[in-house]
Length: 189
Length: 167
Image (cartoon, rainbow over all chains, first blue to last red; front, side, top):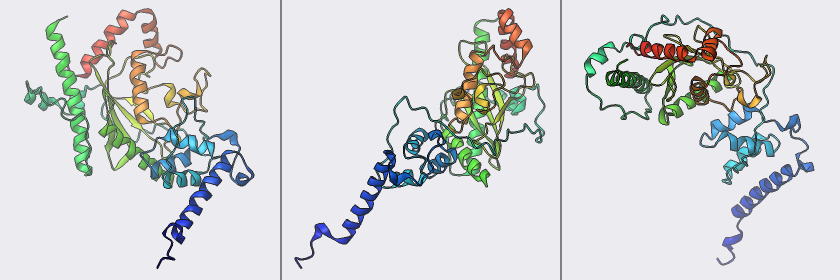
């Protein structure tokens, strides 16, 4: 029973080996060592936005700036950055002087054509008629309470989200209108 | 294939803008069935003739967003401003792709790149309302008025603000 040495069992050795492999690999890549010869270096160290996007989608809590900093330092290897995050070491905060260079693939840089497919509502109308708020103007009178209530709103439910967004929008317009009317009363032109 | 990335990213931005909205900004898709068509409300910055106003704009995204910037257009009543075309289309550097700079006066860092966001666009537009860029007038008439007859310009803006709120 006593030959079951708890500090040197196989799983812990394996973990150590894997972790040190990544550490060493990262170290050599950073130092531009021969181990990094196969990865796509060059391109002026610009960061591929697709990789940044890919990683920030996996880890939305991380700032894109940190991701770009790490990608730039490891020569643009999304796998290395992912491994780094997954091993729990986290990403370093880039120095304030860090200016991310982004490589834009020239192939699909199609400028969005302002297609006017959707028959937009008639221009030249005010926001009250645009969003059908005339009833609310009448009904709210002096209900000036509900302004700060929905500063932030999110729901897991799609329809609820839509409703919350609409509510915030309506309140923003109505609050501005109230304020403007107040101002006009205070000092009529 | 790329459109799902665009959709995910737009959804993510929508969520951020809803849970943590910047002061004076409301934005989101008109319907979540089409994540590429948004509507935004921007409050007029204080201390400017736009103060007190709320301005609606539509944002149209391309399928390869965030590689390409969206287009932005004020709707429902014009915004009288040197950098807004008479039809409402907004013309500022953050909405221009990095390669597209016919006038060579914009710095690359000011222009669109995937690290920008809807939020940054809307904040830029807000500060554009406060400080017109006289170098590239989209509305020549408004630019001229802003330069030469400032009082008239400001009065016109204030009138439009009130009209926009149905007053």
